[in-house]
Length: 391
Image 1: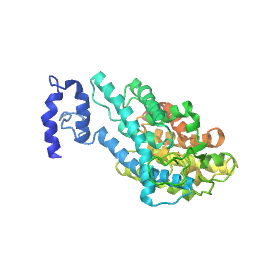
Image 2: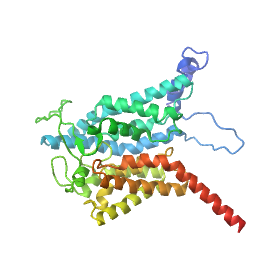
Image 3: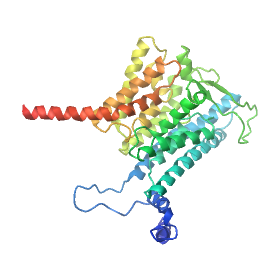
Image 4: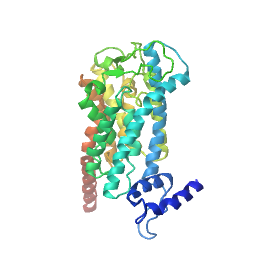
């Protein structure tokens, strides 16, 4: 690393004002601050926080927390593929198939999103904002594996421009950028994103030796079976239990299938203090309470455990609802915000028969109300203190 540091110091003057590549300063600064902690500090006096952990480090921790769900999702893509074609193979071949299927989506999301970020930074002569480090990983994980790359590119560009940059960039966006990407796909291409069918990559496009190749295989998701009043089933109609949903070898979007892997990511976020445990716990609490109500009333055949481990509920609770930019800031507000997300996700899932999945819409809806919740929490605190002072 010392050699890399010395090399960057050597070429840095070329990117500074008056240098040969001064117009590319934002690009150089972005890579330098990503690789090394900046050596600039705040003033020694005053109420300043001195800490080496900047936004890029926080974003890197979130990406690290996403890795378990991503790896399980890659394996599950291969697993569902071989089930669909009726063949059995080893772990390496199964994982490699999923890896090669998912990798292009990650590359497209990052190339498009970071490309726009770099362009905006150059035009504004600002530092490159680091928020897309997480969004670029989230986007491929919340879409079906057979979503065409051009759709991902178009939706990513739309989300970065209209849900982020138009509001002022990282830290200013009202809506979660990754969820806006999925929402764009949902409304523009509902056959791909409605949640009532799952698309399994079954073509032997990577030369891994699958014999009975079937192109274009698709089937119902577990939640769509439940919406129709049928027991939960897998890609070829096999019965599924809550344990299957917890482990993650079920049909679904790439990163949302394994609740176990998602909880490992949650542990990383909570241990490092990056995400709010108040939001996570309250989302699950709201989902569990509403799940019990709809189950007891006969409105859904799903148990409380089924509601929490199937679909994108757990992924939304851990990685979407806890977004510090679009969520509530006050502690009391976080409880309310998370609880309502959990409740709304189950309500949408159960009572909207045209859309068996509800986590995405629940989070986006509460993104709108997060500032209002914080406002009333703060106003309530002020009134309570004034009342206590005047008592």
